[in-house]
Image (cartoon, rainbow, N blue to C red; front, top):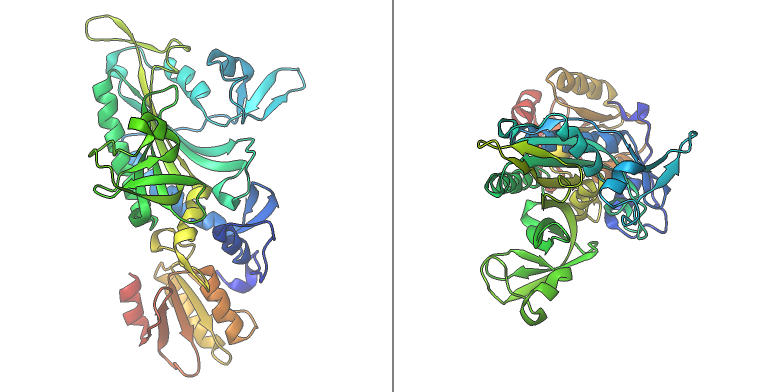
Length: 411
């Protein structure tokens, strides 16, 4: 893509009410545009990153034998009343249609997926079953103040699993933990992310969160000094005398860290299958309630978290797997023809290229390149002649390579 044709402009400033570094950089670099507190437009760069993140997520969910569906954003009031959440789910956006029927915008989708599963699940032979979607969610957040880390409208991957017994649920739950680690590894945040015990609420004693350490985080977690398991500070009341005790290894020494939740998983048990009468017939002909689990990742929050821990004073540093482009090509004055040749060669080789062909100074081009954060910067100039200057975004060293040598590196 040629920069001169892009529907973006980088900025020197950002909205003064943006406190999170991630949103400041994403706005300045042209990835997102702020509409209102907690509401953002994904611009072409931002949509490319989100699409890359979704590709990583979808790959792991498909590998875990989950099937993708797409549920409606409008959820009838009657479904929420069945689970007694119409009055108790404070974050619901509620509305009436022209026929006076009431709905809520989907904040979560148990109220749709469980009656859907009831149409297909009859026997133990239909289990286990795992269904997921990637779809907009709407939550009436009171604290929409951390940019894309806490929004009122956001894309979410939510997966729901259905099982015949606790053992089967536990096996799938553990599989999802590994799937999440794979996703966060590819997204470049695994090293600063902790599997964290959290309150299970009305579902179970514990749920699990994946918490990534960052000063922008709204959560406080206690990280075991021995095994690095995390414990959300909100559940210390469940510990002996309100003091830390690692649920995994019983160690009592810990570090306190600020963190943002990038994923969560719950063992729902029969919390939602019971009110919707979701049953199956077992091997002995006995009717039983289906046991469930749910597993969520907020896409824009994950994008923001990646930026929170992958940036420097110049801008964003994208991990390769989620970068909007593979390379950022810059042609300096007098080398426009050579720049076009390299651009076409990379394009034909299947390398995604952002080509800065704008008529602006070299300094502006370099500054925007660092701000945008694509993994490789390529420069052609009169000085490089038939070579290409190559620099990784997170390194200072530059190299002079031929097209053939460059393609070997990028391939």
